[in-house]
Image (cartoon, rainbow, N blue to C red; front, top):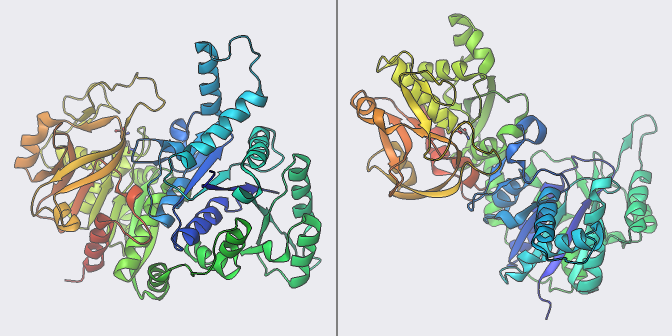
Length: 540
Ligand code: GLN
């Protein structure tokens, strides 16, 4: 018997309407009613995954426990739902074609011409159902990337049409998210683009069950009636998605609009118990009423594009709300910091109470990061270095405290006599790039009484990784003698996962990415500890 329900979310008119947030919000509401929910994203590009893409192209690459390099929307899913996703939750056209072509080479289709329909669409359907078939979910929400009408989205829409046909009316539904533009000169909201995009969906044989209209102004009753009439949906299935102050308001806004109730009714599921959103609401209250402001500098080389550091930014927000702090993030460009005079450099950090140096790849902006770390260390400013940020902290310490003037990472120098950061076993500058880093969740043992152990309040943790280089153990003794301690190590491999500088209020560098595991309702302990120390900076 078919038990899992499938909810498809498509997008119309333009991209960037917040499909990921609407999907995550719906998932949150359904989960808060006790359903077991997961969310999947289908991306219609040819890359196997976004791991090889520049953040300018695609924003942050989000990493799951099982080491999948995925779309940043998976971060929203995990943060909203407090669930872990996996490789199965993000599928790209590249991966679909790779599988089909491998099958063809193996001889699975012997005698047949391999075509988009049925072979590619069958593979898409298989990937959508794979999550439901685990038996772990009552509902699978599948967000189709791109905009309806795009050439590359066509096989996905066709797969959805076939799946709905095969699953039956009561077991699947389609939510179409579109833009309702406001024409200032006419003083009106316009529904025509929505009508046209629903028509495009209909041309492909898909009738949406719900239309979510993204809008800057409230949808009047007349507008709702018009959309209902021309898009063939009941009026209560026209849902307004109005610009919100915070993405974390969206689940509550969707609940007010009755999105979860419409979905449950449409799927024939009981709608009697209201969702339990008490801890979400208390997070929102703290987020909005916090009075104390904590000023954090976030130093990276992609700061123009905030999406490049999405998870870090959200982790700061979650931790801030947990401490009743408003976090003011000052985005500082590492390349710019390198070129400034001492006075101008100092001016950039006026009023800053904590410094976070971001992850990254390549040598652009490295010296600016190292200079910033020296400043944080010498001035006792709480410091948090993540991945490349931790590696730069090791380089800075080796150069400026241990006196190894040419200390560097093998990623940036092949001639240094002090490669304090070097390639992990089996890694080099020449390895094939896609999916070959040290990826996903690994255990780590913490040293008792370290800043990390005090933050986590436990000695064994699991965190997610994404890197090729590591701390070079050959230099551990000398660094430790000088006051930089390895306070977190892989229990079997011995890899250094955390470094801390002694005689400093809070100086922590992590080889892993704690930001991936911060959730709205479970803020990350390291971010909480960092902000608490930042808040007291200069106040003693
Ligand atoms: N480039 C560094 C490495 O590969 C750091 C990676 C990162 O910051 N994610 O080890």
